Image 1 (cartoon, rainbow, N blue to C red):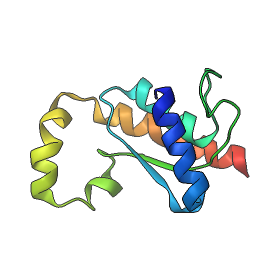
Image 2: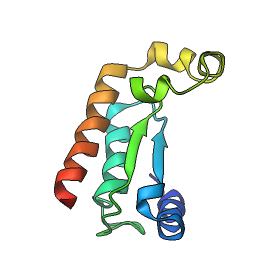
Image 3: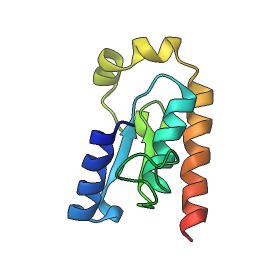
Length: 109
């Protein structure tokens, strides 16, 4: 997650409260999606951006996760996501994001 997006997420969490912000990822690789999820839950692990050492504890999901996919109009999902979904390792992405999301919840408890 680039520094500009980190600042946008931080600003949104401060403005609306972290309980009212959900981060929806769309990266094509598990590792980068996991890193982005880690950044918005427990802080930037590279200690390079606005979220370095900042544990926002935000809810974070990937667009291909079943609970998110189920909330999107099927026609819109088909048009916007399905082509990429065919070439992505969906299971790895879902597992990676879930791991960081759950670890972030434990860390913040």
